[in-house]
Image 1 (cartoon, rainbow, N blue to C red):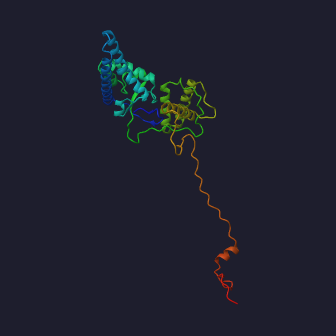
Image 2 (cartoon, rainbow, N blue to C red):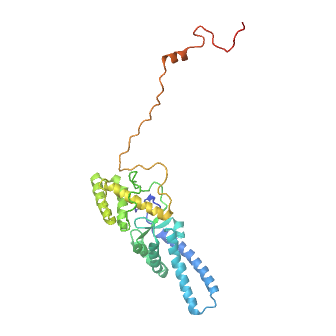
Length: 307
């Protein structure tokens, strides 16, 4: 099982999709693409019946490339890795580190998919998927992507501890373009397993990963910040950027109470202060306890007897 984080910045452990589910998704996508190709080809032939044979041949090639090649690429790019077949089977294409794919990833997958799926009737893709430990075809290998299962049973999610409060936006100006995908995956796996590691081993791994990350970004680790906190803050910044790229300017993170952070000791809960009542004087207490008429005089009724 691979530990990944989705483009929507939801930390999960997603299992790589295997050949049966991927084949079913490909069949659904091919059926939809073939239906669209037939419809578009019929419309083009009817509209260009007066052209010569060479022009019709050129239009047929262009239609093939646009519908059967460009169509899946556009769908995967706009849907961030979810085609109709993958959506029906609960699958999604992500980067090696679990982030959302971009146009270049979909372009490489689509271009190589013409050879290993369309021209060879899926034989090359099936062999590559069976040989790969994570079920990847050649298009995934060259594009640096992975097809994962989005629908996992409850209770199997991996939680990435958030950084301490107050660090949001501190690394907003950091250049993360030079960080390789393998390093992101290693950092996330460390943060997920950090509570299970020995303290000395955890500190050594955090220092090494923080040094590698700082070398890729060109920004040293702050002196007043532990390496594990630096890793968590930078990962949170990257997830926020992926979320903004996916959903626009929607605020990153859910509402409600903030999640507890393992990087700082929990603060003790202060008991509620008891309300302080003003002291009651002895004369007031005696007056409250005294019954009407105890001073020998009749209680005032507001009625005056006639003279």
